[in-house]
Image 1 (cartoon, rainbow, N blue to C red):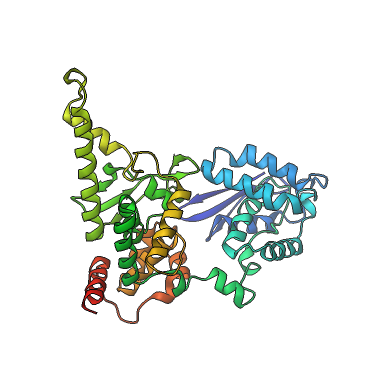
Image 2 (tube, helix red, strand yellow):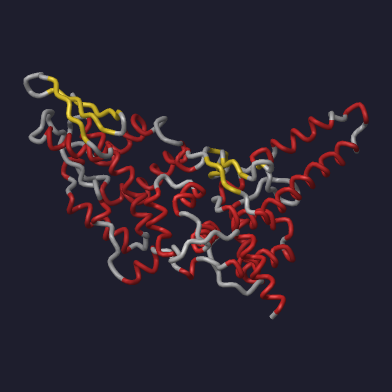
Length: 389
């Protein structure tokens, strides 16, 4: 038997050899590094390998007995989805012990040929890698063919680079942001606050939809990101990483007006009730603060598909290039970096699990000279230039 524990940032492999003597090996790295080291230790096999166990059978067992309850429900559903959609049709009927590194290379090639981006391929491989790691921990295998797929899942041609790498065409400058928000104010005024939040806070769509007025700290000038909306229900933010995001002045003004209007509307509605049925003012306000911040005109929950359609209709009316809804987040990050914001702070504001993700995605947008400029100020300058032209 063997197990891996983490202590003071290091991985400790605890195992017994064939003579039942206990050993401990310290690995200075990630759990995956420790699993690779454990595989080397166990090489030759301590436990008979079940050569008849099919990949799909093990996958279903792993989902039910190892993944469920240990990872976020949304992550579990995503693992279940990619296994059924992409993995089982190709590997499901293969004996799990017979799957090789070469099979992984061919599988990646097939996924890329189907049009999946590098990031999508990484998502497909997440449960595969975890499944093989479990087999190694249980002593049933000594090698993970899906480990370190970054070397295999690399850019192969110019088309792949254009598909996977963020570039200037995927984001707006602050002048274009101003045009988009001005047009939203004109044709979709009820959605202006959520679009302003997208462009000036970098929150993901699900995080925007899940916001409540109580999450806005106007005194501290921050948005507290505590929830996420995913497939019709409220979950925790991606990676369970709560964070505070600084509020840009224009966004703070927009949200302050929105919350004030919601309070006023709720109090007006309360006054329509018979005096005996009316709630105390503080109860009405409390309900507003605990309800959702962004809603439809009818007060119902925002629908992601409808939100995307409305967003693209605004861009079309403003005669702007079409970008994805998620590119508002990229626009926020790149313009902060261009304005001289420290990349460490940008990584924190975006809620990335590591600064390396931020560097890999946005590093080429870093300015040569550091200077800090408010995005609201940059947008105001762009508006001035437009009116003076």
